[in-house]
Image 1 (cartoon, rainbow, N blue to C red):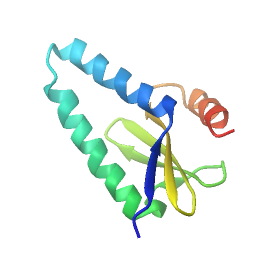
Image 2 (tube, rainbow, N blue to C red):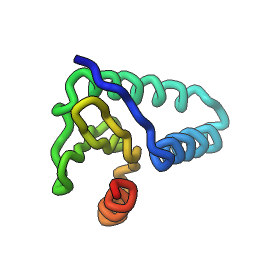
Image 3 (cartoon, helix red, strand yellow):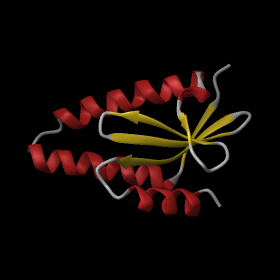
Image 4 (tube, helix red, strand yellow):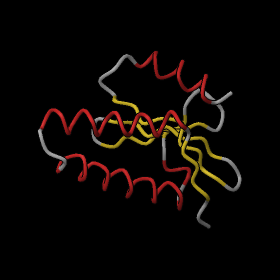
Length: 104
């Protein structure tokens, strides 16, 4: 059974920042649109199969790698909460801190 999807403010801001970066870098929205489509496909997959992501050391929090990004999400009985979309080229310790602060 598909679950309900909830975006945290952090995850929304991450997605916007990623798209703005690529729009500015490429002087076009084409790559951002493509990346958004890839994110949507993976998020739909998570909604149908929430255990598909890799478990983290934080209870009920999983990660799904998509290109150079990790979709970090919390699984609950009737919903998936997107905690962050993280660029994997950043310091991973910052991600752990961010997840703990969003997951309180």
